[in-house]
Image (tube, rainbow, N blue to C red; front, side):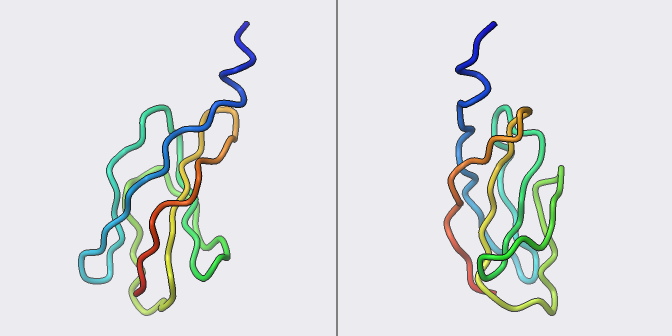
Length: 79
């Protein structure tokens, strides 16, 4: 049993913008991602992109490990 795995954070994604889509590369050991806009959670996804069309604000993403641990927030993108 390795309790450090439960508390170990995954790396934060690095997000980029392509028109109304926010995307990132997969993060090792992440099972899903939390998308936030203006500091409020707006989506959970297992994919590596989010459509921000018509939803303006400052976006960031966090990776989630299999134990529910969150990464630090990604860089921010204003849409």
